[in-house]
Image 1 (tube, rainbow, N blue to C red):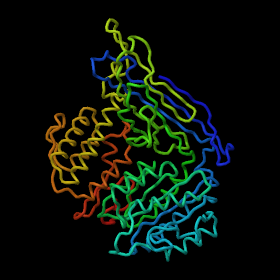
Image 2: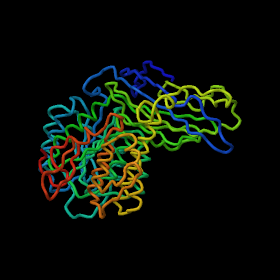
Image 3: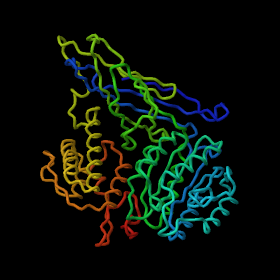
Image 4: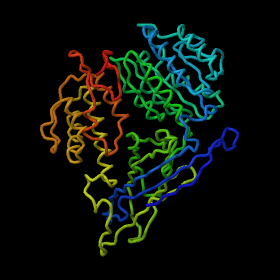
Length: 492
């Protein structure tokens, strides 16, 4: 195990220290001794990476003077009344001094999203009493999507407009809050391209309003832009206010993790499993040896984030018995090596975490690797289910069930059982019912995107979920929801 912990400055746009924060970086290799390789075969090398980033201000929110909050209203006209109520709650939740602006469905040219408040290109409003009152009043006339109107832009259009709006902002902490009821849809290729262009300029929180539409692109957006997505019923004021508070609590700027590997080593995967399960994707462009990853935003209160780094190692020509560096993990000015050695066949193996503990104890990287594969199969199975691909759905859900049974993760078995029958969990024998409700699938995937893959998540949490009380609905409830995301019924 290796670690470092020292203070880092948070630079302001002018280069001065605006507010210090402290980082810690710990790298723990699962197998410090590798089994000698066979000719032409590589070996898996797993390492846990633990990070804390502590904002020394430790307040309820970031310095308002550094925050810019952009709220985008992708909503249909029939939601106007509830939108106005929700926006009043959002304005009240903003810390005084934050710069804010509102995007609506029709810009000055009437051909896509544009700034609605405050008026004038490039302007931002301070969250003082005057602008809160004025903005709340102005929401009553905000342009919204007309029912049945042709889609003029998708999510990629909203993201592009947000990127352009933030480009003229001098605040270092930029936060987008997208409120959407699926009025615009999206195009796969355009969304992928726009997410890549967005880079690390801003984070994105999403509030998904209503039912009967596809939530799946929202998970892609928040995963790529390091935010979270909440599903809400027709009355979404509470969810919107909480999303504002969550966005404003994130006081530390984007601070990427970098993984540099030596020749003969490749990154198989890099997964954040705490506070949320997220498969990290390297920023383009990446070189064969240097990979830059952006995790979920760091918690300013210093709550730790944990990751699993999976490397494939080709040790051809390496000496036996010597400690070798296979990779370097970096966070700002912190650098920690990923080291191991090829074991001499004539020497007894060292006692390691994975040899000292059973996989189900949850104390080593092999356990986390199994959990990651379990979550991945569960998501793939649900996606196949929504697309009507029975064989793929049963294969992936069966593999998820087998791992869940072995690791005693009952909430995953509960999730699978909601879509079919588990005939033999240990053997991965699962059958599903088709056709599946595509909206219900997308709600479940959205919930999985926000569920921690931490090992303490078990049956007790799974049973806390309630379903809609209406017999003709029975939609599974999103944790913490007050209203059904499908029909709007109040939950008990």
